[in-house]
Amino acid sequence: MADDSDERFRQHEDILRSLTAMLVEQRAMNQRVEGFMQRQDLMNERLTAAIERLDLTQARIETLLARMIPPSENGREA
Image (cartoon, rainbow, N blue to C red; front, side):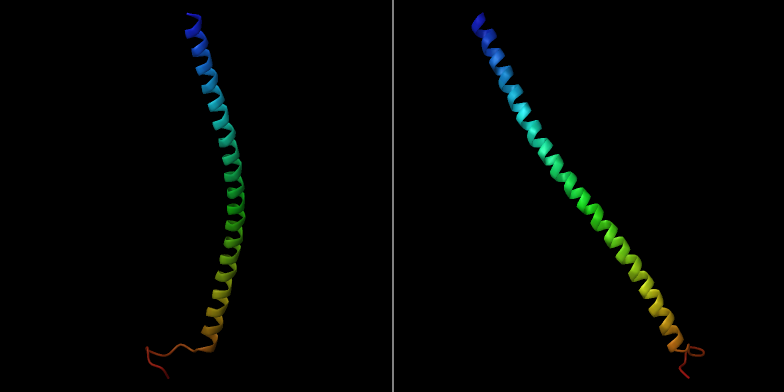
């Protein structure tokens, strides 16, 4: 009986060691993912700002072109 109990105890200890090792690895992976997410957030902010600047630039160019190129009458160029 004692042998069965000792063997089961060893198995449980092995399982606990294995689970502990997996948790340590999972924590390390979670930290790496957190770092990736932070960098992604920064990139998203930079891209959003760049797109806003592009939208503004495009609007300015369209305004300048509208001033430089007069609209034609009835679809015909004058």
